[in-house]
Image (cartoon, rainbow, N blue to C red; front, top):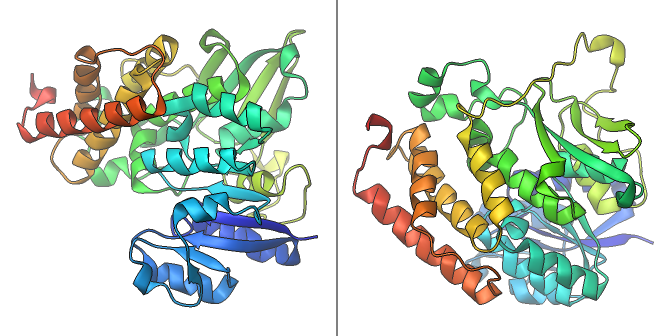
Length: 377
C-alpha cells in the first residue's frame, strides 16, 4: 500500500527536496495535502504535478487544482500516515501538536518545535503513541545509529563550521550578508544558513537532540567536521563509536524520515566512496568565535522558558542582519541582552510559551530599532 503523506511547507527548501524524493519513489507515496504560505505560484505548480486532494495557502482564493483546507484540518486528517513538518520558525509548533493529538506520525524538520516546547511535545507524543522521526541530517544520523538508547554513553553531533571556520574573529565581525550566506557544504534557506554561520544552528540541534533522545546535555558533544561526511555519531557504554556517513545531501535524511522503517533506492547525488575522500578532519569548536553554541548549551541546561527567549530573539536578530540593520556579531549580543532581562518560567504552558515568544520578539525589535551598535562598544 502507498504511504499517505502531507507536507507542511512544501514550497520551502526541505519541502521542495521532499517532493523530489517522492517523485523518485514513484508509487510508494501518495500526497494528501501541500501547504505553501505566500508562495502560491510555486504551490500551484506543485499541485498540478503531484495532484494532492487538499492544499493550504495564506490566500485561499489563489489555490488552483486542489480543495482548500485550513492547517488545522490538514493536521487532523487521519488519511495521513505521516506528516512532514517542514515549515521554519515558531509556526511549526501548533501544527505539530495538532498532528500528535490526532495520532499521526511526524517527520520533523522544524527545530524550533522542540527548542521552544520539547518537554511538552515529547511527553504528548509518548502519550499518543506517535513516532517523531527527525529530518535534520544530524539527528537522522543518530536515529539510524541507535539500537538501544539505554546503552548509549554519548551523542556526537558534527558541524561543518560554516563559512567562517577558517576566518579570523575580525573577518566574522565585519562579514557581509553575502559572505554569511555562502555556506561551503549545504544549500539551505537564509535563516538556517545564517544560524549555521554563527553555529546557533548547532546549538538548536543540541537542544533538539536532548529532547529527541532523552540525553543529558553533558553527554552531547559538538565536533567541527568541515567535510560534512560524518553526519553524527554515538558512543556506547563499552567505548564503541558508531557513525553515519554520506555525502552532504538532504534527500537521504528526508527519505529516511518519510519512509521509516523501510528503505528504498531513491535519489543519490553520488555513490559514497571511501577511496575518494582523501581525509576526514575533526576539531573542537572555537567558543570565542562561535559564542552562540555556548549560549545554547547554557539555555538548554537551564531549560524552562530560556530556550524560548533565546530562539525568538535570535530569529528576529537574524532577520535584522539579513535586512542590513545590524552586523553579524550583533545577533549574539542581542540574544545575550534579551536573556539577561528575561523573566524565567520553569515549566511554561503552551500559551505561556507563545506569549514569551511574542513579547521577546517585540522587545528584540525595539532594541534593534534603537540602532544600538553592539559590535562597536
